[in-house]
Image 1: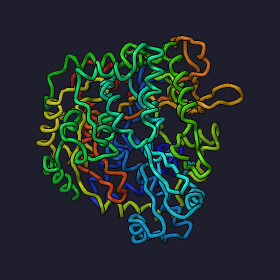
Image 2 (image 1 turned 180 degrees about the vertical axis):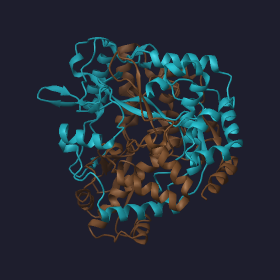
Image 3 (image 1 turned 60 degrees about the vertical axis):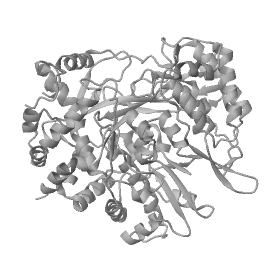
Image 4 (image 1 turned 120 degrees about the vertical axis):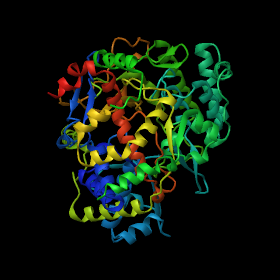
Length: 300
Length: 315
């Protein structure tokens, strides 16, 4: 398992150019134009100094000639995750070409992405899982001049463990069980954070693939009670009781803990419709077909 | 001008607040009544980390696998005081070339060997993009009911979001033609559309390492307000209460993000099926405009502030 260091900021600019160019040729000029604009738009930046104030504008929203930002992969557009995956895949496809495992043609890339009988890989942006003979990952990593990659023990939050018989299993990471609850990106008061009490209860279903879950939960409850007089179970039960239903299905529970997983890990079809509707409204492709057609017409 | 909202009063207040609001760490509540910057949290976190390390020792092997049941050693992330970012927080990389130069100067071990693609890699990049795009399939769009916090002029009302989508849908042809022709002034005057990102932020804990008898955070390189690239200061400010374990705690990492409020959530395909990554370009269209909706709604609702805000900054 491999992790690309500083992924979003070290993506080569020419890689972005190649991607935008392909969007234009495969989907039409207007799509390429919009993609380019999305990746280079001006930016209003908030001051960063502690106790400071103010904003500054990089570029001019009314002047297309100033749309030259080189982020390279900005957040805030649907391309963010897709482009990150494209870059991650590129590093491995390029390395495979350099090592002579494929010839770099469209056919050979297509064949590789479908998985060969000798090796394959999965990519989730900066997180990459290589499956193949011993040492293959190291050889590929050494053939990547455009990024630095380092070995890591987890892939998408799952830890790979090897039993005494040599079998490899993936299990949920017990560290995530602790850290994602006590130090997630957002306070419980943040509008984008799901209900914390429901989240605590849902994680009991979401971490079942960790074999020592009961002991882990007991440890957490015990330390919490020692400091604050009651367990997290009882505290969350008091709050969750007035809140939403707690989902016990594995995928539902993980989405309930972190609704953003619908952004990058699961599709709405895999999740309980009521849960999707709780956090999202859904627009089906048919609802804006005429917009799509309007864009196609601008090709000429 | 298309009137999409009647929220002008609250929008104006939001925009004004945004421009003048002092920067300060966010009160970060872990469970009701327990704040990350308190000594109570630090004492609890130390006991939890110690208990965890004792019960579930790290068993990483040289081949990056764990022994069963296996635990990686990143639980020291709890030593980050969430909501208290390093100083300066650092602007996003408006120019990636500058970022690479900064890496080479301040953290050379993290700098890639080559900055940009050679001719052979460019061919591979083009072929890969074509292969992926040809396998793309449109999908549905999950749009968050809650918009990003901390941004000006954003409605959190679902009905308002529907109204925006419906209105733009009916005027789409005119908008897209003028985008294509780069009539940005027209789009601003007619629809209040401006193409511009707002930056938001989120916090991310780093694992803390024990070196030379003390806990040290990872080195983070950021750009300060004057444009200089610097190593971020991760010492805790005075607002964090001191406990007997205070010295092992550190500021958490701040990640700057560009916000696109109406559909800041979107479906991007499943990581389990890489080559079937869904490229929903039609969502891009929505997102592009809504990304600007942040600005345009605020701008539309606050024309009286025009001279005092972004127009002044651009001049």
